[in-house]
Length: 363
Image 1: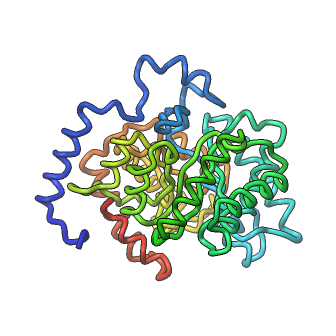
Image 2 (image 1 turned 90 degrees about the vertical axis):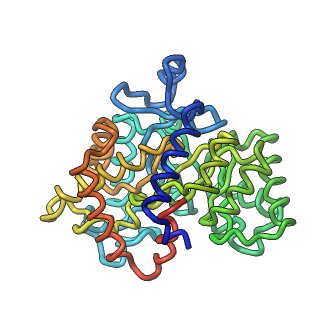
């Protein structure tokens, strides 16, 4: 089992990873990239930008995830609006304003990509970006009309879903289309061929600029990176505050070899890293902000991660992420011990339905 790796194995793996990275250009900016970075949407000299693999896009080192969990703590809405389902009724105006304001603050601090993974997310962020679409890239997955459901597993149906979504959202192109695949990756070869065909057609038709996949299946994603390097330009997959690179057969071996960008979901393990509730007046707010920054710094120390994509529910949380990017990257011994303890508590607080996330301790 991966969880039983010894400390000696991990140290040996870390040394091997460092050696492998020594000759790898990676996704981190060099001196020759300065001109291209200054031309990226919402460029801010205080923000770090990383190359999203073979897409060639320079995206902020932290991007905006589409979820808005616990947003009722910010807009003071009804309890049932605590999750990430569409918010309607009396809370909708406050919700729409919150999303608009968060997008606006992201643009101000230089965060230039939002990842939307459902119809509800695509619709609200499309509205929030209306008239300023050039300020942010949008990574798009209307998962309800994609391969997680059997009726959406042919190229024709996938393209139908893309067309319907674009029409409903009122957009004429998608920057980054990632097909939401089965979380366990158990698609037939025929289904994979249909997915690849859909990605190819969408790009040839000019509807989509860049393509990729999202899944929770490391081995399957690795196969896709290696077998379909033209179509798999980026992936969206879990990488938490406590994730570590496997010494052997890591997903990141394929990421590096195939120059694939990585957007990391669940950096805070569905908020289990935090003791507070996300509201700025909570007694744990300051400590939670620090835990969030430690987590982001630790994640970005892996140069194969292009950007973690936390769901941010307030302007204050956006500012905290911008601060994390500016702080010293490597954790000192005291900070490492502090994050290790926070992660121990994170796993203890993890809801039962997120137990699968523990399998992402070693990637």
